[in-house]
Every structure is written in structure tokens, then in C-alpha cells.
Image 1 (cartoon, rainbow, N blue to C red):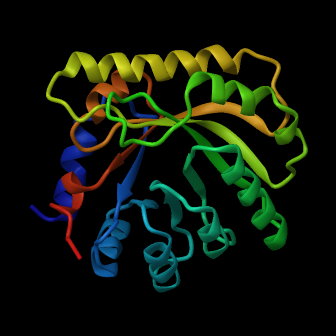
Image 2 (image 1 turned 90 degrees about the horizontal axis):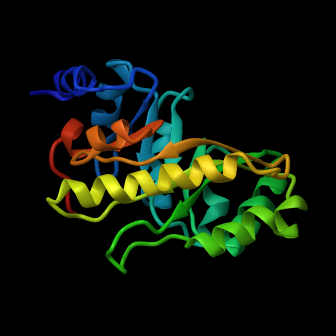
Length: 224
């Protein structure tokens, strides 16, 4: 099946009409992204800054680019002027850098705080104590060029769906818990970015508001 057919199939399996589909276009050519765009997709996810920065000028300007990979502080400047949402903010220092680059380009940059919910140590993310330090600390209150709009997490890569479900449930509980707190105006915890090609159905059942799907749309990843 082609990209449009894959998208139609995926959308037919969605249990939540309000859940945003982010097409993960990493390693995919501009032509494949254009095909998904013509099929109605406007949100695309990349995990490498250089790749995103190269593709963006070649494609329609109403595309919303999502940085979904691990972001190094020295790379923020290359996407600060156009990135729609940074999913993987996993440290206060990265948040400070995003704020700094946002100020330079005169933008408020939306971010998600990445929480470590998986059993694999290789995955990035904050624990609950680190999350609280950001949410309730004084540093964020001084940042005028960032907006924290929710949380993001990646589940354990396992065939055991109960493990995945528990991890997503935990992330949703964190969002619900802290969204009730009296937080700074820079923080509005509404979005829950969780779920990929293999587990997006479970993620939707657990309240995901955006899923990141790549291989199920474009086919297996091109290796470089």
C-alpha cells in the first residue's frame, strides 16, 4: 500500500477522533513527506536537527514540525525559528537553551517534558522528582520564550502489552496530577505525547492526545 492508503488504514483504527497523528518522517525523502501532506497530514516529526532543517525549506510552509528525538543544546538554534513543538525536553539546561534561542528569534517555543517511563535505561527522560523541580522551581518562571504544554514518554519495547499499558497509565496520571497544581503561566499541561506505530492503540486508550507514527505510514526506516 502507498502512503495515502496506509494513512487511511491507520485513521480507521483510531479510537480517539481528537488524537493528533504526527507522521514521523525521519530518514524519509521530501517526496514521501509531500505525498503524506497531499493526503492531509500537516504534522511531521523528525529526530535529527540537520534533517529537519534541510527538509523544512523544501516543503509547504504550513507544515508543523515536531522535534521528537533527543535534542542537544548546541543544535536548538538551527530549528528555533520554525519548530512547532519540541517533544523531548529532558533537562532544565535544555529548557534554558530553548528559551535563549526563542528570545533571539522573537518566538515562544512550545515544549513537552519527556518523562522516563520505560524499563530500558537507554531511553531519556526526567523522573518525577526532576519533573517537580522544573514545574515548581523559580527558573521556569523567568523564561518568557518557552511554553510547557504537556508531557511525552516512550514505553518499553516489549510484546507484553500490560507493561506498555501500565507505563502509559502512569504518564497520564502524572499529567492529571500536576495539571491540577497552581503552576506558572508558562506551563499548561494539556498534551500527552505517547504511542508509536507498535503501541498507538494502547496509548489512545490511556489518553494520548498525539501519537508519533512512522513505519506504519512510510514503511520501514531508511538506514543511512
